[in-house]
Image (cartoon, rainbow, N blue to C red; front, side, top):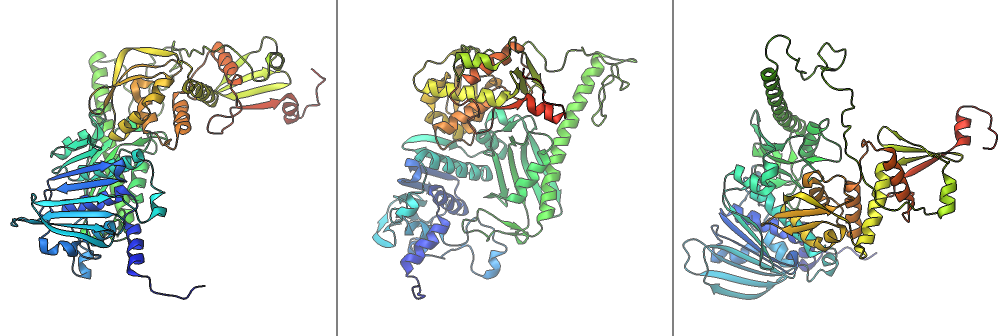
Amino acid sequence: MAPIQKLTPEVSAKIAAGEVIERPSSAIKELIENSLDAGATRISIELVEGGKAFIRIEDNGGGIPSTELPLAVESFSTSKISRVEDISRVGTLGFRGEALASIRAVSMLTIRSRRAGEEIGRELRFRAEALTADAPVVRNQGVEVTVENLFFNLPARKKFLRSPQSELRRIIAVIQGYALSFPETGFLLRESGRDILSYPPSSLRERVEIVLGGELFTSLIPLAYTLGRTTVHGYASQSDQTRANRYMQFYFVNRRYIKDRVLSHAVNQAYESLIPRDRFPAIVLFLDVPPDDVDVNVHPTKAEVRFRNEGEIHRLVLSAIAEALQRKVSSFAETVESVYRSIFPGPGAVAVPRRGEAGAGLPGSGAPWTGSAQEIGEGDRTFEFHETPLSLFGEETAKSLFTPGKLYWQLHQSFILIQIRGGMVIIDQHAAHERILFDRARVNLGGAKPVVQSLLFPATIELSPDEYERYEELTSVLASLGFEIEPFGIRSILVRGIPAVVQNWDDGRLLEEILGGEGRSGIDEFLKSYACRSAIKAGTKLASEEMESLTDQLFATDLPYTCPHGRPTMLRVSLGELERRFARTVSAKR
């Protein structure tokens, strides 16, 4: 083992920089915080290659005095704290004095600044630690920072950066967070000369609407709750408006944009019995707490905080959301009751089911029953499967597998039971349809023409910036699958046609889910997401003909025994196993 030695300043600087600056979005976060602390009302960000090649951030804040500019890029140099006690009551976003020094250590940095009252500003240029230029500059009040060739001197870190599109998505998330926290500040984001985001100064309500989108905003419920010196406010989505991921969840503590397990858990618990486990509410949650009740110095990037009383904060957030949701439900119940009363006035009116009355309105509950005997959810909708029935094992083998005049049964509207020679097969209808759609999608990408179902009324869908970027990446893939889409405004698309095999269009929600889903590591992952969300769901009633067609198409795929995610599509239960389970003697050969 080598002897212990003190690291050189160059090595120490790079290690420290790696803790603070992990990727382009980390640098942008630190620089935006500096601009906001300086009182900027306008911040513009320009990028090339998702920030990997070029970042420029300019603000109209107070600026850095020319005489202090060299000190501003040194480690642990800051105007925001001076004593240990200041850390526990810091009121600014930044305070560690590491941001500019860390960025300088791993890039080619240029910083220009002019302080209010100065006639001439100053420009410094660096190549990592080395100063390459120091000159006066004529510019407006404020600071402009240019970061070029990030991690040029750390190839091991640079190779772990994602694609420009992936890095851009992370940057968009950072900008959206601070745009929500500081609605009075205007934000502009450009990538390679193209406007990506443009948020003019506005009220919080207007900023939430533009960031989350007008359609989602209409479903949000205001939050307002106070306990002692702590306040929660913001917006939360109704339980019927959820997303496929957590992209539309934003948490702020004293206006600091953070990720926090306590707040996230409280939100999850508030919605636990209201939404499916794989769905996520939209939330914009501001927590205002006394500075001495929260520690913001627990993470190098200040992305996490620690509360003095986590249990109290958890209960406060849970109560705020639960009360808002309860208020919305009560309002809806009152509306329903008033409608019923207007239709059935006076004595003998139909009893309105009350929340909390288990079985209200059901036969035998004491309330008149006016419904039909038809099962709820049973409609005339059918699912068409157009492919010619084939079999993986060859025509003769396939025919010998099933008994003559084979019958299909559906169990709990989720599983298909088929009698075969020597036993039975149980098929998971959702997993089976996933496999069919996934294989068909791969064939379509190979050049086969998809069958398109034109929409009677073209759908206009407003996407988040992240979803729109994903749409632009996958335009050709979506067209190959059978989606007929065209841009329609800054972040909207017009859908004229969808693949005929899609069963869950849901007025465009399907497209939002597959564009906002987690499958972003490659085309196959995207196709898995598309197949999963497009397939028929558990709980969907199928006719016998539909079950037969689904089964035939499953056996026509190359891998009929598993869905694209690797789950089994079917189980085979032998007659011998059934006889053993019932403790019967083995039957004669059938």
